[in-house]
Amino acid sequence: MNRISHWIDGQVVESTSGRSAPVYNPATGEQTGAVDLASVDEVATAVAAAKAAFPEWRATSLSRRAEIMFRLRELVDANRKEIARLLTAEHGKVLSDSLGEVARGLENIEYACGVPQLIKGEYSEQASSGVDVYSIRQPLGVVAGITPFNFPAMVPMWMFANALACGNTFVLKPSEKDPSVNMFVAELLAQAGLPAGCFNIVQGDKVAVDAILEHDDVAAVSFVGSTPIAKYIYETGTKQGKRVQALGGAKNHMLVLNDADLDMAADAAVSAAYGSAGERCMAISVVLAADEIADDLVAKIANRIPAIQVGAGDDPDSEMGPLITGEHRDKVAGYIDRATADGATMVVDGREGAPGEGYFLKPTLLDNVEPGMACYDDEIFGPVLSIKRVAGYQDGLDTINASPFANGTAIFTRDGGAARQFQFDVEVGMVGVNVPVPVPVSYYSFGGWKASLFGDTHMYGPEGINFYTQAKVVTSRWPDPATSSIDLGFPETR
Ligand code: NAD
Image 1 (tube, rainbow, N blue to C red):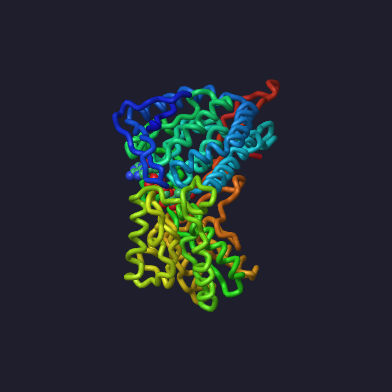
Image 2 (tube, rainbow, N blue to C red):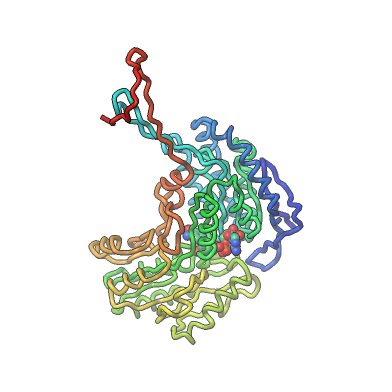
């Protein structure tokens, strides 16, 4: 059985905590590995390694840091298939989806290659007579990333690429459910020339997370995961004086207006609801269908579902894999179990016909779903799509804006004016216009509003650079010694 340990100071370090957690192949239900769970002392060892590496790394030239990012870019590119294979083996998502995840993670490494340009400061000559003022951005020190199971390769790349390029050193606490892929990425970072200690991994659970939050030498924490934990991380981390960005859960709505192309909307809803078995924070979980077209749209979505190939992620014919654990599969099935009693209409029941072994459910479609039902109110995080019928634009908009979650949303329409008004009105962080999963490219930033993000800084892109650096402003005078005199006044700027 595969043992998955820590990566500290440039090498694999086995835990002596005596604690571990099982790792499964979700397509078979077999245990394939055991991941070490760090003790408080082991977290301290990783932070100490990162702290020791920081002075030299922050003094490393921008061109050298960019060169290492370029090399990492080449190595990740060359190893896409291996990263995807490792990812599928523990997460379960289909290989094509894993390759997409690697590609979207790689974008962030490409962005970080531009660090010399991204980190440039400003300069004002002659702000006052003989006085120049300029700003510089400096790294924070040791920063930590705590990541979820659903994008085990991409989400760490959202964080460490910019953090390292900006001159910080990094401690990653990946999800304990699919921990292997980052051990491979750590080796690629070392091959790219990153000095030992700059990137560290502590495997673990709440013990490791709390040790990170309480460690005085951790300057900042980036978190992605569920809303209750995101809130906990934000509150605990900021109380300890750390800079924190904590991205939480979601319930993303897709509003389909009367004039939309219904075939295109149905294709988009099916892709965005059932891709990765619905285990995406940007998955569509509710379609708001305008009354006039709702029957047609529900029929078109329902007609597409039987063709979806559900099976093991490493089978090239599969389009949708299993859920992450048996416990999570049962939780998702629980929402389907009670939906009709709560008043929803079952259109397609995904509990029927799923492969026998492994943690599978097939796609489920529920109609006439309303706020107040558990299947509407909660983030299900599985292949369950709900339809709520709405009177039109305003009713749809009001529904979206009443949700406590505000990660992503989309509008499907041929009316450019309605789409533009939606972009103006909707209280959500990421908006798609005829695009169901509007994950921003790496040179914009990713983040929701309300209960989908705690903190004021979004992830990656320009806001990521901002998060991983602190500003310093220098006011400087190099006087001509001949003009020097004593002046006890407070100088006016002019
Ligand atoms: P999770 O919140 O259970 O776990 C996330 C991380 O927190 C893991 O590393 C885990 O070990 C740790 N953790 C779990 N319980 C903890 C506790 N009690 N105390 C301290 N740390 C704890 O999330 P998950 O199930 O791994 O991932 C799915 C969730 O992540 C979904 O809610 C999804 O919407 C969300 N997500 C959000 C985004 C986003 O960008 N907003 C992206 C991906 C996933």
